[in-house]
Length: 56
Image (cartoon, rainbow, N blue to C red):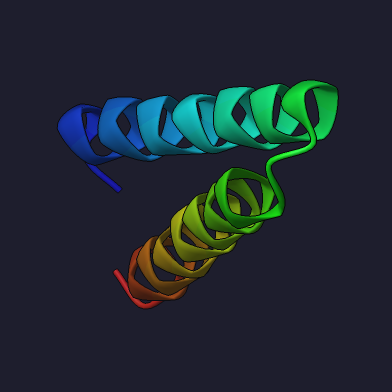
């Protein structure tokens, strides 16, 4: 996994966590769900990159 990919995934996960937290605080279920989805996407990307790294 390249450094750029790691940074992008970390940023996406951080944005997702922020959205989820803001959604919880404001009672905005859509924003909360969007934040959870962003985090899940970042996790999937990280897992895919880890698999690629394992085969290098």
